[in-house]
Image (cartoon, rainbow, N blue to C red):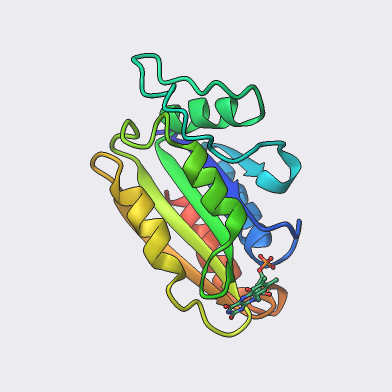
Length: 171
Ligand SMILES: Cc1cc2nc3c(=O)[nH]c(=O)nc-3n(C[C@H](O)[C@H](O)[C@H](O)COP(=O)(O)O)c2cc1C
């Protein structure tokens, strides 16, 4: 059955390590007959969550008119969500954290999704997975299917490129 896949790429470096793996996942997902869309956050204008709590109403809408609402709509419709981050100071990068904060309208309403996590680090991912798992843990019935850690330059690592492609194809 065709699935709807949403990939959140949070590195500022388009075409580099984590973003390349996002593209591999998308390629695999499409080759597997699914519908897949990548959001490269650096290209999307958005601000931090203002903690106004206006989204805590039945229609779950954020008051900020920027690029976030369509992504959240797609995530609500998705069967599979991929979060990708470069590791900064052994944690997820600030852009992904800012994005997660903007998920406040929907974070508890994401229900029954499958998740894949992609992390890219120079030498060690440290505690980067914890915050991402914590965020996913607020959703309903989540299943974390696979976590990918890329250390160093991804282009010389055929094995992880293939693994991520296959994960997309079989998601
Ligand atoms: C601000 C900053 C902090 C970083 N902190 C870490 C770190 O804690 N551990 C690590 O192994 N690499 C660290 N790095 C290196 C990146 O994680 C690494 O270059 C990674 O491959 C970048 O992923 P990308 O190509 O997807 O942007 C850091 C890089 C920057 C710019």
